[in-house]
Length: 250
Image (tube, rainbow, N blue to C red; front, side, top):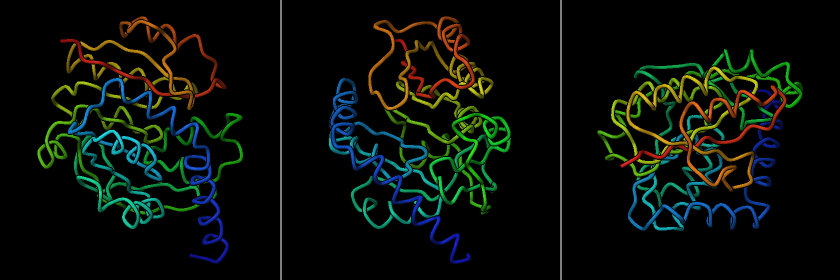
């Protein structure tokens, strides 16, 4: 790695740390948001743990967290500072099948690291990503949600934030999880549609969503997949991304 790339990587990691740890009011808001359904002892999967802020918040609620992060800079950070307190930590990607996959990394914007070429092609021309350059590639091992469940048990909550790989990750799951959250990106609606379709194949889910880092639901009621997709279809490709939350009905 050249000196320029090393400096870009360091700057990118510092930027992420400032965004996710430098605003304590956001962390307090996130904790209040999660505490309505996470209780001590709950097993949680954090797929795409990035700098570990959500893992850390979930652990503060007493959850047993398995963090997954293949991006080397973030994985090093988690392994050094967080791994001893985690139930498990895996430096792997997650997908529809086990094997290996190419991870495409932006040194300056490491949070948009992705295994999905379709994601990069779709978002590259949107305003929020126009200055992003994916300048590194690394091959990493890949596992599945089913394999993680076999190793650690079935989680109560699974958060997925993997920049366009969300539907592929859910295709590697064959049993419903009580609570699932995954990122939606208005510039790439096909991933959201496929992810919701896969969840509906697994069980009877109701849905809600969060815009950006607001940590509050858009609607007061949990709605059907059809209603959510109609809601999302009204967004423009330049709309702010967020998270879809799915709750398995009893």
